[in-house]
Image 1: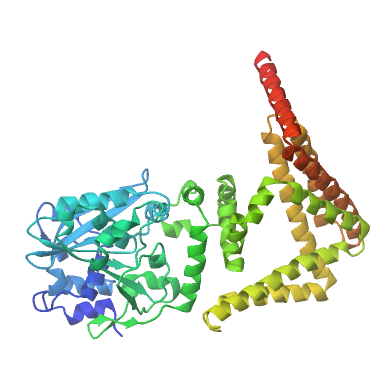
Image 2: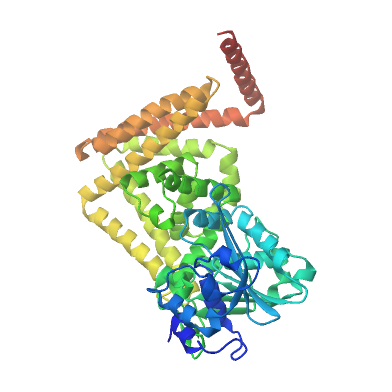
Length: 543
């Protein structure tokens, strides 16, 4: 196997007339687009590639080979465009290479190391980007009736090549003879009309590394898909400079890395379960953290200290993206089970009636007050045991679907083994059970208390729900702090107090559900709320 630099050296003395353009040349030229060019030297007329490259080549074997090569160094380039804007999250660049007198190669730059470029990648998942708009404008400007064009790009550049081709006129598209998408994402179905892909379907060649993540996002069904080997490992195989060459062609295999396929499966399910609005909130929350701390590049953004991690968590919570993030581990552990529950008849019934919640809280609360000695241990063991049992069943199910391919599903098996080991330790050691159980229970109670407090603060009417949330926030916060700080010998008292709180909470939920369900009482209740709200607004104005 050889590298791109070695390929460039092999064919250094052969022009494109001597050795026709091929798939490796496509990767070479798309990789070149990431380097810096002198826009002034290119100007309004074609210029030799080696004359307009301004990136240093001394310590870069690939670039050094390019500059010395007749095949690439003498290649004429034109129509260099570069746009960078933090305000619109735009990182766009395109360049045209003159392969032959009548055939031009148009390459769109992918994501560079700038934070703006990385944010634009994520923006693609919920709205049309400025880069996509500019890809259409660029093609409309440079495509001429007397030339033929090959469009290409790596990563985001591959997406721009396809997006631009999909949105130009039939006359312009008739001049396009081929399109290369080098591990770039497809068009987001919630943002773009994906039926436009049919216009270019027969023109596209998709090239993925064996460990493919980015290129599988919003992927389309194309006939010509190739999987190449890489000298890198894992997610770094995305870097086109690492793709391997064999006998003048890209070295291909017939299958993806099983680990990447598992990640693709999780990512696909997560994206399907997250709305464009949720994606936007999450992206803005995450990148706001990096921008606030002065990061301008992806590398700087990844160098978060403890304060940076804390800021990230706060921004995610404040942008109301916590549920969106939580869906990632949910998909890892449980697949799409919760999505089916949320959209099924059971979810509609529970959403329409608080009765179920009230009954559950009441029953658990009464059991805790009656069986205080062993209630804590039983509850923790039952809950964790249910998780272990479900994960076992789900893991076996996935293994059967994959014909017992343990390599393909090894990450899922690892997750089950970790959970099962934790459960076994808790069964054997009482100290471990109390530490884990009290931590989980206390944390959950504090979350319930905080949510009740927020509901209390946001309430505009001092009605039943207002006072219920006020009392609930105090009682649950007290119980949560107590179980976290109290020693194990006080667990019995804790279960008695918590049982009473939950029973009262459950009974109030049952009563309230009947008020809501009964049309007569519900109407009276809401009329009372409106009167109180109106009275409060009048008092506020007079005050």
